[in-house]
Image 1: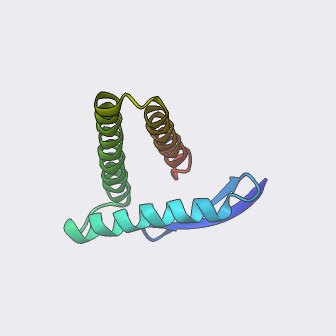
Image 2 (image 1 turned 180 degrees about the vertical axis):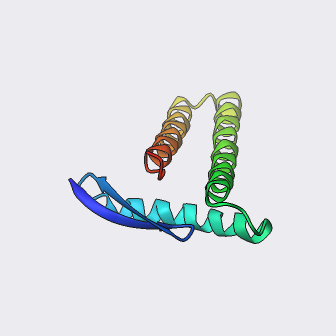
Image 3 (image 1 turned 135 degrees about the horizontal axis):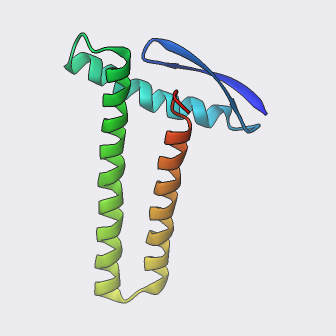
Length: 111
């Protein structure tokens, strides 16, 4: 197991992860950090917990939009072309997005 340090919303989080996943977790932490800064800019005076809550909500909203878009595209492609390989590719994309959501949840500071 590898160890990495993440910086999110002014705090430092030491985490263990699989070997080689340090850069990926740092990237995810950067996404969360950007959303946390956005929350703090839009609503000054947020507590740490509320900052992270809003960051999580922003990310969940984006993920939800991407899932809806992927499903919509999948349905459109299936209706327009009957192209089974394209439909499978979109389904695979939706699965990857769901796995990303699970990783975000697993990498959250409370995990």
